Image (tube, rainbow, N blue to C red; front, top):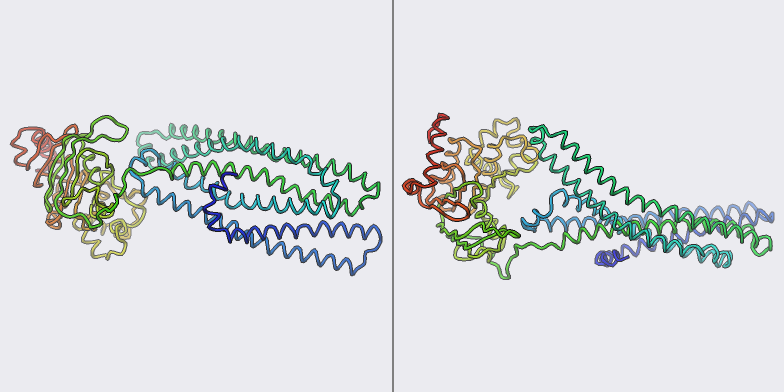
Length: 583
């Protein structure tokens, strides 16, 4: 029952609605006592030949009124109790979603998307059942069981009642033992479903790669293994779950046996009438539901408790990126001073960056080049505050970026990552993602600067073209340029291009960079790239190797150093000449 205490915050909030629902449940339980008693009275009148048309009509009228009353109050409790359950599901889903969007990159490295989806679907379903079916079952079992027992005692015979309820404590013991086992097994079943969810999501997203490498058969086999594991875990749940009903049936069978045995003796001794006995048997039949409800209640509670455990574990996760008290809300502006003495990723003792320092004046462009894994993307991640634990400082306009609010920083940064993510909507809405109210003219201006406008016009529906999931209907170069347009349209103080021109040809690249230089002559730009042509026009170019700066200067100065930069430039120049291009 601990789950009800843990959800107390919600029950207190919706207490008025729950009180109306429970009152309606109790009213239904009282109205249900009327038909068995009337049947008993009619049976006695038939036995004594005292029944008349008027009395039969009277009793039938009461039965009809009871039926109408039960219908009305059942409608009320369903609306209130199940309505509150849906409201709890909505509230916790919003909590989870808000929590997900506020978490840092470490959180999403720890939890895979499929696992998070399982928490937001399967686990919430279990929680909803506690607030709906759990409350309903508990209130209904108590109200029906209690009123029925009182009717059995005061309207029939207390001795029969005592015998009928004698086996019932066995049910509480059985439910307690089975409930504990059910909790553990259901938690394992939910975890296996999360793993299957991860597998399905990953396979669907990577279906092109699977087909390219001909791994469909192997992937299907792995999926089957995961599915078999889910089925096996759920079978363990159902083995326990299936023991509830037989146990209840056995216990109720003992109650019926004792009632018939002793009831026959009491009728023979003229201590109760046949009508009383019929009424009592009907009341025992009414007790069957509360007994089954107890088993069902334990089932719901244990499932909901296991689900809420998983949800609470997620909500207890804290982001390592937090806003300091009194953070600066003014948008970033001015020069950028990057000075990192040492940085290592969490749970990794390897030093990723060491003694990396550069100063980038407002309105200037800086190029960032180096081998794959040299540390370029790590520098950009620190600028974006994906990680705050480092020795040194990163200042913008003379203030540490950790002293700004996240909105003041990130809303002024236009970031185009290596992996271009487009949403399953139109090209227009992808470009104006930051502000869906932006007019078409502004969207087209950004698209022209990204050199994607003509490509869009050549598509069947132009700017209304649906790009599909993750932009599946577009080429790599088109996705890159739409992502660049999406960053341009926000007119950011700092634009970061993280190898985001790799899928376009040299001519298109030159057009985009020239457009950005004209548009952003008073704003700052950082370009991380593998192609020298992407950065050769920057005011300063930094070469990173093994997490530290090994070369820096303008394009001309770096060529004179006769180092890595010059070697890479000459290699790429030769490659392009062989392809018939000129750098």
